[in-house]
Length: 190
Image (cartoon, rainbow, N blue to C red; front, side, top):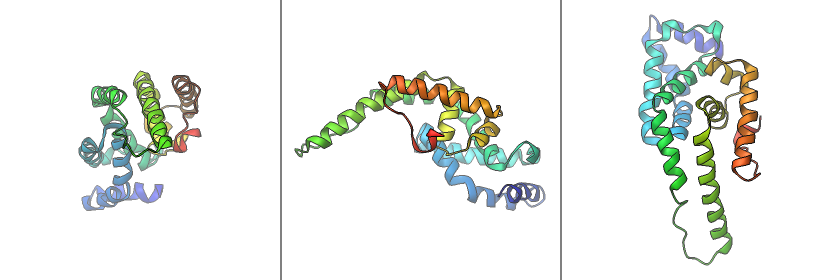
C-alpha cells in the first residue's frame, strides 16, 4: 500500500481528486484514533482537519521519510497536541465520572464488575493524565491506532528504540497505578 499511497499523493499534485482515495482509505482509522483521545464530537472535526492539512501539505510529503499512513497519524497527533488542555480536562472528568448507572436487578457479579471497572477507570485516567505528552502519544498510537513500533517512530519522528523504551516505561507506570494489574490493551503488549 505504501507505494500506491505515495503515487496517489504525487498524482494529486495535478489531479487533486486523486487525494480522495487516501481520505476514503484512512479516514475511519484516523477518526477512531482521534475519537479515542478526545471523543467523537471533536474527532469529526479533527479527523477532517487532519486530511485538510495533509491535502495542503501533500507536495511536501517525502516518501523517503516514511509511508503515508504514519504521516497522517503524525498530522493528527500534532493537531491533538493543540487540544492538549482539552484532553487533560477530559481525563480529569473521566476520572471523576461514575462508570454509569447500575441497574438494581440483583446480579451481584454484574454490580461488582461495574464497581471494579469504575475504580480502575478512574485510576487509569489519572495515570494517563500524569504521563508526559510523548509517552501518552506513543501509548495511544499503539493502543488506539494499532500502529507498529516502526510506524509510531515514523509518526512521531523519533528513533525506533525510543518507542520501545517509552512503552516499557508507560507499562510500569500504569501497572503501578492500577495496583499491579496488567494494563495491556489490544496491541499494546507489543
